[in-house]
Length: 201
Picture (cartoon, rainbow, N blue to C red):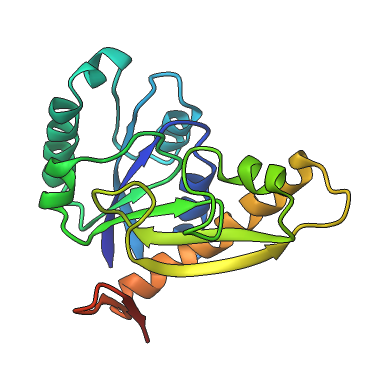
């Protein structure tokens, strides 16, 4: 079993998918700490309802991003987290977290990276008029949305589809692929090779 520390900023639907997968016996993990970059994030309530210890940081805390990341690192180490899981965390993680959890910080992004990185992956793909987009799970590094890719799932954009419909279908993929990928990690089937590419067995 792996112990997960989850970072989030909003509604926490990916956290909920992880919690549900654990309860269903589909993910051999325990969420040991949730930290939100926003005190009003609904994801904190999800953590509370699941009995998971949680912490919220205010905007003022992020006036010094390095200090905020040091605080997050200490909280996660104190909770004995094995991996940090970014689940809609709208801030970049810095050196303190990446050093303490080297190659153990995981992010999910709503596009097929390297296409459409950044905070608006779904809308950017939609606006670009591409025919296919999807979801990427990758290890986070010091460059935003450029860490080694663990898994991807593509999704065809329907002719005349609305942005809202696309968002809904992307999120449905996220809620399936994130717990499934974390289970591969729990089983020891994911490793980063010398060339910094990911091998999944």
